[in-house]
Image (cartoon, rainbow, N blue to C red; front, side):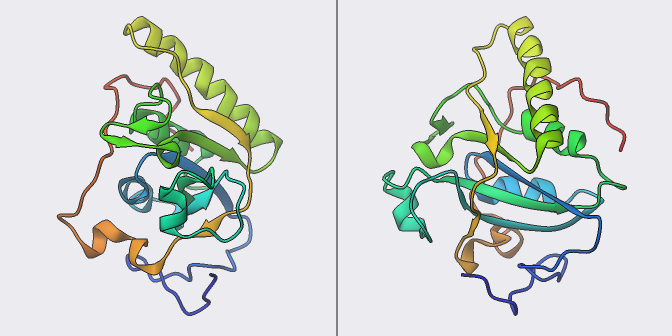
Amino acid sequence: MANSTLKHFVNDTSMDGPWPEGFETAVFAMGCFWGAERLYWQLDGVHNTAVGYSGGTSESPNYQDVCSGRTGHAEVVRVVFDPRVVSYQQLLKVFWESHNPTQGMRQGNDVGTQYRSAIYTSGAAQLELAQESRSMYQRELELAGLRPITTEIVAAMEFYIAEEYHQQYLAKNPDGYCGIGGTGVSCPIASHA
């Protein structure tokens, strides 16, 4: 579904690259992808965001396929970032604090496999940092009396960009639905790059 003419509605960058040298990508699933994407495009150092599908078994799924629950894909946001400006750890902090990672296959009223919590890592360094952050945040959640984290952390799989109308949805529809909501528990990751 890549379309070299598709531009990011907020920052006017190409939705399918190429990315500037030295930039990295991260992929997060935290429920409905509209609100998750907005969280990330607002951060300094984020070059591009795109919503899509990842973590499943079917090739080139569409929204209806994913919503059926038969593909195994999660709604995800791909974040292209400059690690000299915003660190992967800072992206992880936003991830943990902006949704409830203890709910299994749901976020609030959104129920289904596509709404699960997941981190799809690019390389060993991201994998290690994501696992460390999960352990860190689990301790904080336990102190707050909350359930165990259900977030899956695995190597990145194929990212399938979602339909154009989903991209930057909350910029195009400011009063649109956003199911993003955290636990209220802070994640003790340092806030510097």
